[in-house]
Image (cartoon, rainbow, N blue to C red; front, side, top):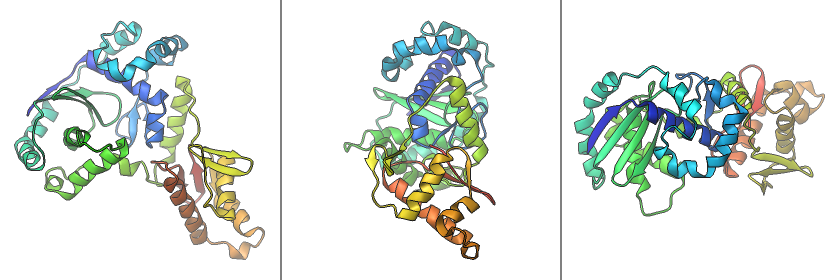
Length: 326
């Protein structure tokens, strides 16, 4: 296995197109990731640059023409598809790959030795492209090679994550994206790799964290609006019935459904403890209990996740209440 590190404006451009595709298609939101304009905010953050071109209607009009081809063709894009955007990317500062290359070099031999004990090592070449944008790390497979986009603020454990994903992806069973991620999480957390990459954090687990910074959620929603992206909600109410991903949810109690409905009509705003208390106990203020409210909300969260969502949608605002972001 030979691992190369580089920075390429063309790769930056190609990756950015794919980032925008994943945002517009709803993939990032469906997997509990949040858009932002700066890195180092959250392991679930997706950095979308503050470039005027991608907020123009003319860009999105051109985007729609090639949208269906982006997943299979983006590694081949040369810049002429969105020439104005490519010109903007060419103006960016070139990233120095020396520090990350040196850090990876300190663990590479031991990592490859461990890989050889876990899998049949048929991965010939790995190309790591340092990037300013996107998720902390992403990858695509081409033949017996692997290309990794590594955000500049990412830990080297994300390189290991992508390489392990290559092997899990080849598993003959049909695993979903989330299942593949969990399998790699397990390997990095429960084998010798855990000692090799102590800073590893699970992006898939952080997507279910109800304690996520609400300011990150709100800024993500603002960025979606600035880009002109309107995504369909996963939770819907029809004829006083709750539907998640189009399926009728029948295991909510009457109180749980009322609490969820209150959050639904207050979407992207805090539903206070007092509002929930009024649903649960009416005017009986003596019955007020933060613990009982928390347990009710936790049951609602659990039932939403069990209904098929891979991400958290109800977040806690300390000392105030809860926010539904879908």
